Length: 362
Image (tube, rainbow, N blue to C red; front, side, top):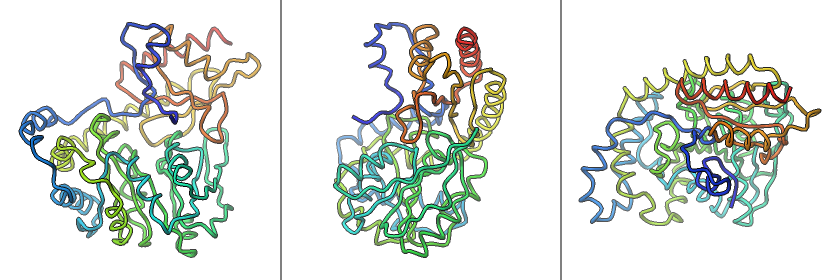
């Protein structure tokens, strides 16, 4: 099984922990739309019936929401819904014409897992690691690829990047560009940086409700593209009814909840700035620039042999905090961790706990 955050139950069993722990390993909005309980309660009788196999109403709501926000003109025919963004990653990778697939890394592990599990040819393009940034190597040559995956904002660093040069390369070579924008709603510049606005038909944008809407248990994602043939191909190989009734009904409401959208963006803007500023005051770490809901941190304690795995264990046992050991991201090493941005009180507790641990190390 590929590595992800949110391995709470396994860690509690491993270390025999009975107390509640605070999960900084999964990048989820601590808030949730007020409609969730009502929608689920009102949908109980609906589970006696199959969902609409084509999810036409849901796709229309999503396209209307995108058109309203980005001043576009998508129809439901431009959208494929799935059981989270992960199903969509695998669906795209299954399309027969995509034999040679690139991945810009370090990034979300499911792109590589999908490509390799389907027997496609995988090509990796590593970002340049700086003092507090990861940068796409503009000298990378994508010629010969059929498709390339880019996460924007990227996981694990959270940066929202201008992809104009990447789009130009793909456009000139006829490469399909898949941009995973699962975390873009957290960002201030989502309207001007989204790949939805680029003038290239062979772009597929992936999004999900898991992160921004605080519902990882509700598996709902969608792919949107100007190229209807790609969307049609995805539907043709998609398993039927993979989006359950509760996810469908919630999707019909949450995409129209403008108040939750704006309040969550304001919340993360304020907490992100405060959290980053407080982290930067701690000796012994490099804090990477982020625009999203999480932060990549590098530990500068090689001479003390204090690794990300040491910090993860100590955080959990001493303070009841779970972080993401980022050493298994391709291109990173055992100095890196990733932490989510949570509520003000949780963030302050994390900063205080990290100060205490690193104070002992240094």
